[in-house]
Length: 428
Image (cartoon, rainbow, N blue to C red; front, side, top):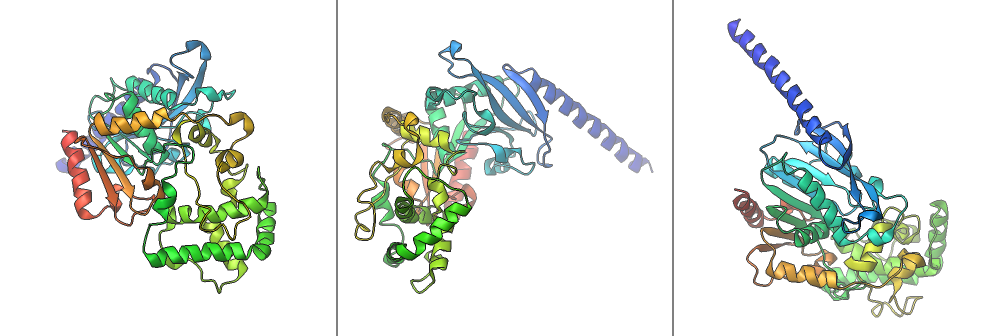
């Protein structure tokens, strides 16, 4: 009985301790500089507490009179001494509201987790929208301000991380503020040198085996040959889906075919899933919808990603299409300039600023430290993976046959161990 009572007393005081910790932590959040609200969220048992914290930050730290906007930050608390995984999201962070969201690095490092939604996305959108304040530097200023706000709460090691555009954001944040974190893990993060970069097309032409390439090309040609019978199916589909476009649907049809090889290798990577030429129009169209849906090119489909398209056109860059191989079957004579015509209203079109990508590539080659970059061998975005030069502070890992879904957990054992060992050594 005494042992049981002792156990019950221990549980009682542990419960009081957890309750006090929660109260103490939420109070600390409310007292952070620029915080305007703190809302408790449901959390998995991995964390002790989880909160949505709203910061009020300047639209431009260099121009105080420009005004402010509300920035969403999801804070998952484990304990004060654990490291912090700092997720520099490149888009909306709606997913972070889920009680079950745990970044793979957070699990690996048994860490606290802070997810910053990128400015101008979802709940971090200024009103009114002043697009001139959406730059890589202003976004990095957000990340720095929030990092500094937490410096007296979490005094341990910090690791910044992001996926795809979030990976770009992670690398850019490190370039602008190299002393903010102890390590950086960027997943599948491209650094394009132009709006239509030019490196992706030859890269795609050499992915996989000759058999794989022939099968993809055969599907594209067949789909274009059947345009007279499949286009009406597409017309019915976009009408039912209430999709509209900035260019004629016949051209969208061609762009879906051109996008197909990029999207296929980015996400699918298995040519066994490509239907044969013997299949019906409906079967071919259904496969196209899965891989390269016309919604991607629609005005409605780009509403939530319009800030990204704006950034791509101004600083981040994108990719082009090879029309030569399929020229015999295409309606369009060239895809050059497609990006602005398809994705952006005229008032948001502008000149591409190439210096940002040049500065970032130079930073990675010469000054970046404790940085891991993970790419997929078959992912077309890997065409724009930066070179590391002779910089010993950067590790670039190419996941064999990996797609855009390449993560630490998907790496072969030797690469997996190298990444974990490097991180461990940097965070001692």
